[in-house]
Length: 139
Image (cartoon, rainbow, N blue to C red; front, side, top):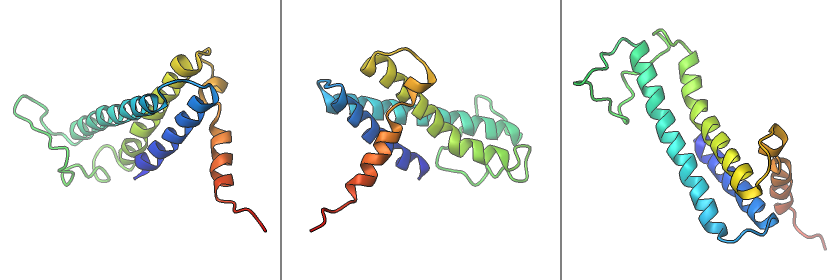
């Protein structure tokens, strides 16, 4: 759920950046960034599943087959991960995906130096434009 909302905001952010810099192939760039975000989510989710299974004492050997849809054996509140691992595994994939898209945006779309202000530039303007899109013209 959180990743879906973040993906929508990232798509808007990338789209507005591409329009601002007048880049060609806008939809290809947005689709590519979306695929990079989703790919990062999948890899981070697999990593989190392996960490939770390792903390739970599961035998991660050749015969172990972690099913990505079966989460009933990954309750970590009682295990070594406590309440920390569910929070990390919920937020880490989205944060990593966002950082990858920010890196792609800064390096390949804007062609600017990798600095913190450059990575996060345009986010405030995106939220302002979203807020302004709900305004109706008054008579």
